[in-house]
Length: 157
Image: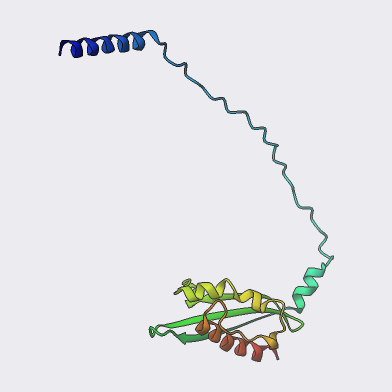
């Protein structure tokens, strides 16, 4: 037993010597390089004379903005509404917008999936050739879109 106490004493003395003789590590400071940001340039629009018309102005005058609405019922017996607005130029759909439930946003994931996919099926297509079926997996929303589309087609003529 006295040997164990002696060994522990030696270990404690050695640790004390090491602790007091070893100098602490120097603090390392990191220097962030200065980022040279280019100065922002202020750009002003040049005024155009009032008597000039651009091609965009002429194209916009030929575009028809047509809209239609439809309601549909989900399996949970919830009635939902879809408002469809299409911009049509020369019989071709150039823009499309859908508003769900009077602007309250998505009521369910089906509307969300439909919203992410319907434009690819509509824009660039002739208005009379469009008929959606299960776009984004949403069959009821697609059917309601088609109902609103029928209302839009009656406005075109």
